[in-house]
Image (cartoon, rainbow, N blue to C red; front, side):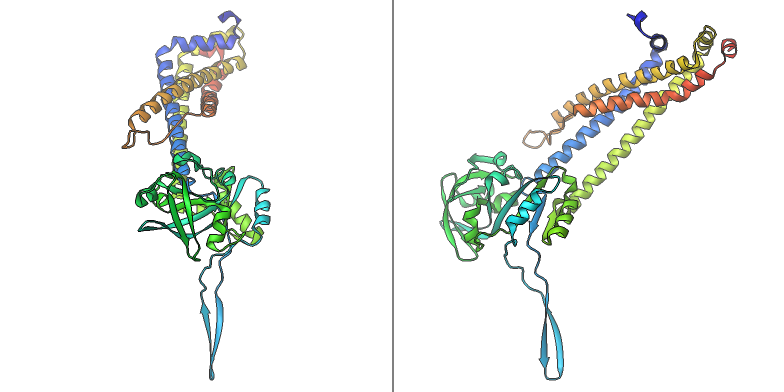
Length: 408
């Protein structure tokens, strides 16, 4: 099999085999470095995915609302004294002006996946003598469920609403002592009251949301909160969640309405994510540099050890380019093998971590999976790093004169 390989490949594998101990040591070093990079990348991706899923369990990436009412000045003429008094208005429950048109315009923007109108307001849910303050949210299920995976959060019942149905959280169901099929009287601030049937009970993973959030059909909520054919907000989801703030600013400038992204409303959390990404990048950079210098140092030693063989090869007619490729191939082989072993080691460590890093209920803290694309990219980068690391010792080997190299 070896006789069909090119000249450089045969010598590269032979040189690596002859210095088997140092070859194994450098491959081990590359493997450890790659395993750290792959493991940390998978862990950070899983952690961020878990955090984002919790955030988007009960909110959209961008929320459009009516613009705030601005302060107005009142002039009081008291005989000769004229005073200007600024009165801060209360923010009334209002509908987005021409919300159908705005929703259609936003839906056509690049990167936007789904827009979903919502009519929400404060209300009270009453069961017998017990009354709880709730947030009544009117939705269009077929659109809203593409933004918030409410069916996936359902504990029991059905997510598909009729006009007289309501979805409530587990905490509210416990507080009121109700279950699927029971009736609730919902009363809003406008005085409107309606008896609704509990269609489903959900768990959003947040006690406050499970206690306050309730969902009904859009046409059910609108007359109850006093907005006939109006909506209080439009939820928007997009392909790249990290571009949400840019989209919100563009929509606000383009339409004149208020637009807030999850990045702005969760500023502290976004700062944590940015810090994690920065630290992970720094760690990967330093690990990669240590691997690169390790490969380079081993190959420099190999050039010194093999200088006599290199001189003989040059005297036998081997060209400088062939000697150069010989050591570049050694670097590439070491990098490639190290990346494969390192990825396998990262997979093993990740499985070990998931088996022992558990929540109090025995379930994994979050799902962290090694992406195939990450493994392929790491293998390519490690191979390229091996080639770059071999560049200096390979150039040194190629410059050796045959007579000088043979004499030692």
